[in-house]
Length: 137
Image (cartoon, rainbow, N blue to C red; front, side):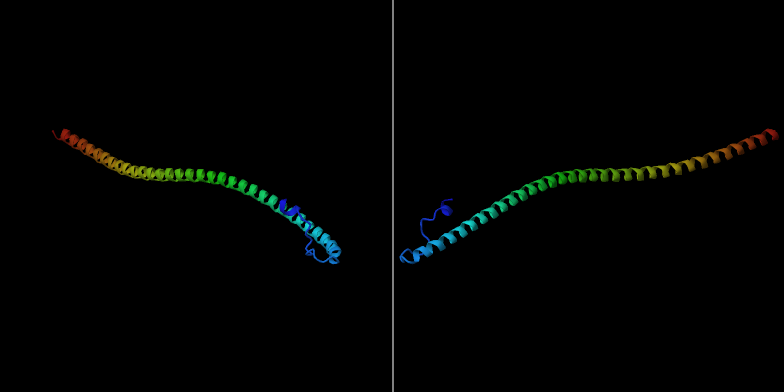
């Protein structure tokens, strides 16, 4: 306000010519009024820009907050996905181990069945031989 409000009486005419003074005074008043209007317009523009800046700053803060919240959620999801991937890998490894064990058990079962068949055949042969011996004595 100290700069814009004071005129100090200087109208730009130099103040030495007496006949130019009234004309310069009228021209100076018009010029001063135009300058004051320009100043008011500039102040309005400045106020508008400051308001828009405050709105943009507020919106930026809101977006940053949303981004932080979203990033936090994304981080949580990423951690959970990593945990699930680890569990999936562990489950696949366990499944492979169980399948290998099942194959081994099937092989063992085939061997047991083959041995039982041999045993049954051997018992049959023993029974036949005992029957022949009983008939031969």
